[in-house]
Length: 175
Image (cartoon, one colour):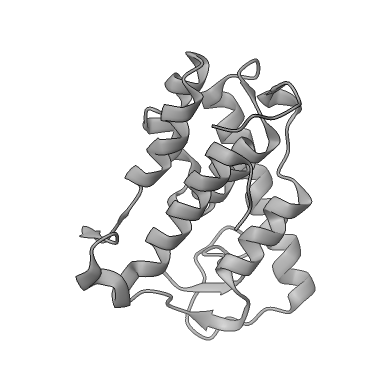
């Protein structure tokens, strides 16, 4: 577990850090034109956005510029953070790197998946290490276990990302 020199901060006062946003952008990659990152997944564009600015789903052929992609992603993250703050509780306390790890995980799973998991309860109980390790439970895509070697070509990147976020959450060390 991280031996941070700093106290944990109330979730209500936290926002994704610049390093956290850079991590999401680098992990998602940028696509000018809509793609399907995994067969059967929804279309994504920009920095992994599945929704257009008006809230409708991204469609095949949609295009986006880098500035538009950044704005859309920032808006998406702000919405995710609002959901996460509500389920963690504004007074729950985390280190910045822990918050960044949960926001990153929620970016790909949807924040409701984090909220339905045991993570918020573990955080509220002060069981931070167990909460961080729970990130590794989000290892399935379309029913496939992404931690298994036979699924590496299909969704191995998800498992690599979950391991990186669990490590960040536990240690404060960014991949």
